Length: 400
Image (cartoon, rainbow, N blue to C red; front, side, top):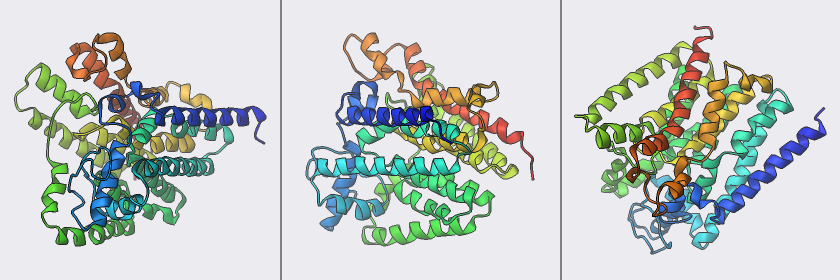
C-alpha cells in the first residue's frame, strides 16, 4: 500500500516541475542558461523546423535558410527531411508561437507517459518516486523546452525502445524513428547488435532509406548541405559542454598543442573500441546503453546543454531496474552515480558570470582560464563519472 506521505511527495515534485516549466517558457529562468541568454531567443531551434516545413509546403528545399520569412528568427535546418515534412508542414497551419506552445504541451504529455513507463518498471513506489526525479526535476529539459529542441523526442523514443528490450515488447522497434529525428542516434545502435536485434537494425536502415533517399534524389544538391553536419571540427564555444570543447580550450586556446585534432581522434578510437569490447562481453542492456550515450558526450563536436536530456531515460532506467532500496543511492558503491546525476541535472555555472563579469552576460571563454575550465568541466565530469561507474558495474557481472 502506498503511504499518504509518498503520494504527497510525488504531487509536490509534479507541482514543482510544472512551476519550473512555466517559469522557463516565460523566460524568467533564462539567466541560468547560456543558450537562453546569448542566442537568438525562445523557440529558435523549433523555428528551424517550422521554416523547413514552410519551405517544404512551397516545394522548395527544406535546407533553404530564409530567416525571418515564416518565423521571427531561426537557426538553419540541420535534420533529415522527414522532420520537415512530417512535423514541419503540419506546424505551419498554426502561427509560429502557437505551434511552439503546442510542442511544449506535447512534450509534457510525452514526459508523463515516460513517467508512467517508469512506474511499470519500478519494483516499488519508493523506487518509482526516485526514478521519476530525472524526468521531473532536470534542468537541461527546461532549456530543451525553451529552445524548442528535438533531443527530448529522441530521448523518449530511445527510452521506449530500451523498455521494449527489457520487456520483450514491440516498442523496441521505435528505435527505427530515432535517426530520423537526429542521425547521431545511430551511435546507440551497438547494444541492439549485441543482443541480436537484427530486425530492429534492418528496419532502422530501411526506414532511413525510404524516408530520405527520394528527397535527395529530387534535391541532389542538398546532400552536400546535409553532410556539413558531419564535418570533423574541434573548437571551444561558451555554450558547448562536451569533452571535445573542453579539450579544445585547453589544447588549442591555452597551450597551442600541435595537431590537436589528431590526438583527439586517437582518443575517440581508443574509447570507442573499449566501449565496443564492454558491450559485446557483458550482458546488461541498461548499462550498455549508458556507455554509448555517455560516449556521445565524450566524442561529439557539438554538445549543447539541452543535449543532456538524453541522460534522463538513462538515469531513470538505472534507478528503476538496479536500485532496490533508496538508501543504496548513498552507498559508497553508488556515490559516483548520484554525484553524476547532480552535476548533470543542475544548471551549469553560467549564472556566475554575473558575479565575475562587470559587463554582465558574455561568452564564458573570455573570462579567467580557471573559471572557463571549471565551467566546461561540470557536465562532462558527470558524464565521465557515469561512464566509469557503469563500466565497473558491468565488469562485476558474469561474462558470456
